[in-house]
Amino acid sequence: MRLELEQLQNTLIVRLNGDLDLGIADHLRSTLDEALDNQPVRNIILNLAGVSFIDSSVLGVLLGRYKRVMKTGGKVCIVEPQPQVRKILELSGLLRIMDEFPGEAVALENIG
Amino acid sequence: MHLINQMKLEFLSIPANVAFARVTVAAFASQIDYTLSDLEEIKVAVSEAVGNSIIHGYENAPDRFVRIYATLTADTLEIRVEDDGRGIEDIGKALQPAFSTDAERLGLGFVFMHSFMDSLKVDSTPGRGTIVTMSKRVGSGVMQVGTEQ
Image (cartoon, rainbow over all chains, first blue to last red; front, top):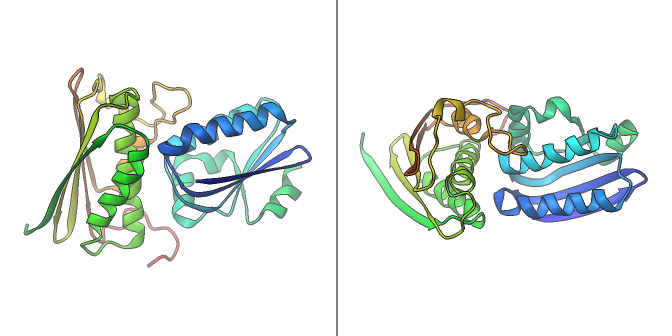
């Protein structure tokens, strides 16, 4: 997994790449929590364009961060999931609580 | 049904082996005519089953073994994922969505296995381990999404 974080005002952009499974779940959880601890983050944009695989262990991590920002009135949105990843997000119900956008710029416009 | 191939795989109960297991089973399955979408679904089912063995069966102990048996016939893959972990007390409850002993887990593992495979059977003896058996036929089209293939 490759992970890139960028903070734009109060939005944390998380760009994920590769296969996301139990093997990286702990690392992803601690990296995101550290970012949320150290910066004033209201919203999170998850750019999944480079993600080729995702399973329920990582959905759990994403849901945990959603619950965290939701407490302070923030949102989590998803950008450009590949079809097989989108299918998993849909089946899990995550797409019912996280908005989906076709690109980071559109997400940023809508999330603020 | 004519047997095409069989395999046994045994590996340590560490998270890095979730990827090893799904990629290996998908490569094995690709000997018959699955679509790419089918193979993706098989990968998810294997990840969930192996993940359950590691997290719930062995409670993250890294020195135990997970076993996979896979059988290919002309149109079907059958996969058996076994562990010797703590087992499941109430299988009916474990198969329901949103049942999980950990707040951050979604309880979706069995939901994905059930959705992406044609059959799913769970046998477990508390204290002895769990056996998950699942199968998928070629061209079963469990979920139609997009225009892939």
